[in-house]
Length: 330
Ligand SMILES: Cc1cc2nc3c(=O)[nH]c(=O)nc-3n(C[C@H](O)[C@H](O)[C@H](O)COP(=O)(O)OP(=O)(O)OC[C@H]3O[C@@H](n4cnc5c(N)ncnc54)[C@H](O)[C@@H]3O)c2cc1C
Image 1: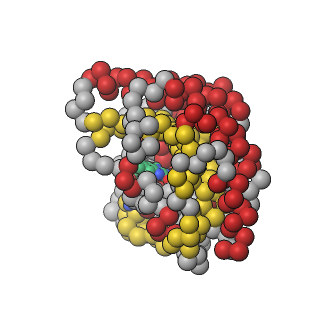
Image 2: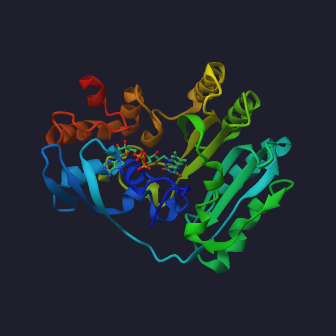
Image 3: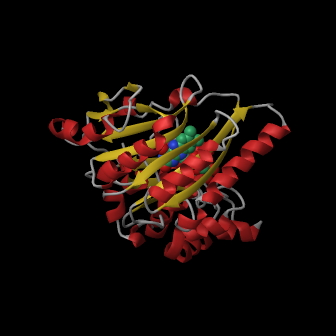
């Protein structure tokens, strides 16, 4: 199944709102692989949404999140893919600028089968590092050619890239997801991670208040970019890079820590504003960001709101994805 890059995230919310992951270039977003959904609507009816049946609902569910009903079952297109070549390459933060430049150059012309995630944050011992996570999902014979450029972006401190089952490849982030942490998250979309973007990322990381601050990129390319814009509610079908800005700190660390971390994610996101695309990845927007969500849905906003009025006129379902109509109703 086409998943996100983190095995612990639930498939329902991920799929209904988008689903950026390591197979995006080859098979699209998670929602591009949704074939049908059983949904309990606001009036209590159980319906199936798929091609040819409740098509407006099927269209709206693929990007509009949980704003339309409770999904009780999903039918998902599966792909034959035993293994991928994937892992983490850790580079010292002192080489960050060169590593990121070389990485962006190598990723720019990579085929659909290769996706690359970048993480700027603290390594296991708390020292800041740049982590590059390539995933090759094409033929094993071609893997070395396409992955090789990422192995020599700088002085690699460690390298876990190997042939692994796809499921294992998406557990790299699991150790970082622990209980007892508060997390603030902001998001923005860049057309490409170029020199200006790298500059902003490095400046933001330099002012991070703690080792709990990080930035993670997700690529959008290939098969996902080739889906027509009006095929699903997801509103951005062009190559881009989604940036996740995270600040985590221990629960109960106090109001001052909370304020510093909240301020940092906001400042970091605002720093990208001059080069960012409108909106943000809806699955990572929060309450009070209805205007940004509308910008993300772009020309699909109108049809999405029509579906909302049709399937949930009383606004029973208020998704984490803030539809403009939700803001109006509150
Ligand atoms: C640690 C972490 C890593 C992430 N990594 C990625 C990633 O790699 N790629 C990516 O694209 N996104 C990623 N995300 C964002 C993720 O897509 C969203 O947080 C998504 O909402 C998670 O869905 P969930 O079902 O786990 O969450 P939940 O909190 O359970 O649900 C979120 C919302 O989804 C809707 N929803 C969930 N289940 C249903 C249902 N059965 N019926 C109707 N609506 C439902 C509801 O509106 C709900 O409020 C990540 C998030 C986290 C916290």
